Image (cartoon, rainbow, N blue to C red; front, side):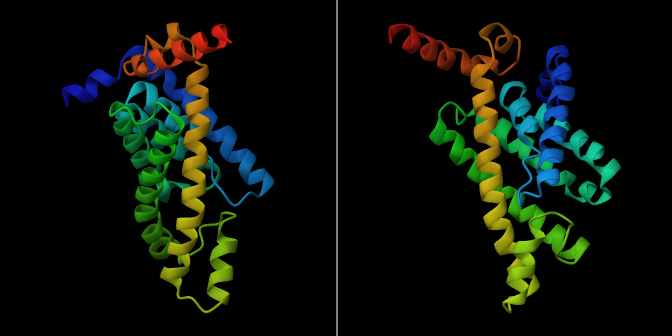
Length: 206
């Protein structure tokens, strides 16, 4: 419990609403464009990478509460959002968010966790359709003769893998653009200071 409390510094708490705002804007944009992805956890991943897993989990949970005001079905997927924040934060602490390939691997692990949680939620709570653009894929699979669990699981593998890997790559690029001064104030920001300094040195040398 003490380690969890230590993650919630004033500077990390102030980052939560920013992460929530990024999630909401990205999620609503995807919904508006009818893209069969979610991209509503980019903010959660940014927060988890620099402020830790528990702050990331809170960011994911609060985001789903906001989404739930407009679409109550989103509340059922709060465990997915919170788990994503925890996994990204833990992977970041292990140094697995410091280059593109490690980040992509982290996104893959997040996708697996999301699939394991979201599949039963979608089938049991919503009967296979949760009202998102990705339901079209499920409908096609059902029409081809696949049973409901197989259809939803296959859809989740396809959608969640692309969504989570793309989301964390975007989050990674944003963290890379953060200043060393700001990163140094975040509990886990030091993980990216050396990386950013190397990038700047390379540009100067070029």
